[in-house]
Length: 314
Image (tube, rainbow, N blue to C red; front, side, top):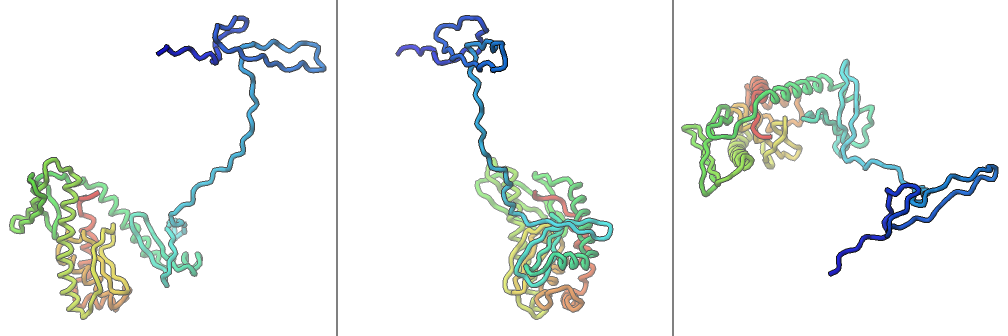
């Protein structure tokens, strides 16, 4: 095979004026501008080794347009000395609803309701909204100050209002066994299992315990109140401990399993009472009191305990 030869079409960019171009180097044709008719002087000489000037052709381009955002619109409203920002969502519901989570205030309103009506509804509920936003900020600040749990043998994890001890074993099968006498949770992991796998195993155990216990408490308190719920499921909401829909579907946050049984029972009684009253009227609280008379104390204690809960899962 013959060796490759040099490309003879290359232009030597380093040749100087007056020098003879090296052999095998392409010589560009001489391009010069004609002398101005009013000028008697000749145009300056053009180097034969300079590439010709090319006038760029203008290219039509479309203006850059940002892609449409799928996020609901956010609006601002002045409430007293505070400016609050809220996310507005439209739905087929018949009334205006308010929800406060990690992202702040979310308002869900029927399509026919005007912005003015929505703002007026927010002003009517401003005391509740500002109070909840403040509580949310305080909980977030307190949570950020707490060191995360170390996922090691002997770690202390909250369960039913007290701590249990995490015990780790390495074996051929994945198993999770809780000893109520010693309050120890034994987790068997395959060799080389990561911390993420361990966290998922513990979370799965928590959720299974929550499902079993919550169903027992729901059945017991539903019989006391004389109501029947349609279905039950677990949620992982950030701040909402439970919910009940108009068709009697109840959802309970599995993280309630961290708290003592009386606090779990309060949330259970609260959601079951919504089957009779889909609001927080005096009659609603009277229904809660029929099956859980200490609801006021439990409500305040739940708020306090939720702020003290360590950071377990990211």
